[in-house]
Image (cartoon, rainbow, N blue to C red; front, top):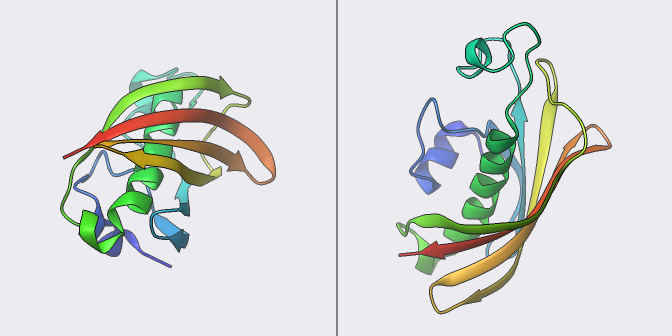
Length: 140
């Protein structure tokens, strides 16, 4: 298990944009599972449906991307590289994510070649699928 400080040793993201609380499983270069507990004091709630707090879908996708980046950057030869979004496909949102929910974020890398990679991610609240997407990334 990795805590926030250990995640910061891998990812360049910092508050308020570090969206992972912990990594619970890691197979470097292959897959990772992380968690984010959604709190009422999150920076985005005052401006995103202030009468009904709902985590923005783009931030769920970002949390999935950060999970995928940890998978890639945890390979020793990738340490210190920067990972960027290159595209998204088949994005589907299945349920709202609200304060008190704990997102379980699962990312699997499916291909890495010539400075580009692809992967697949799913976000769950309990056993309920909240979001899924295919993602493409580049790195330098």
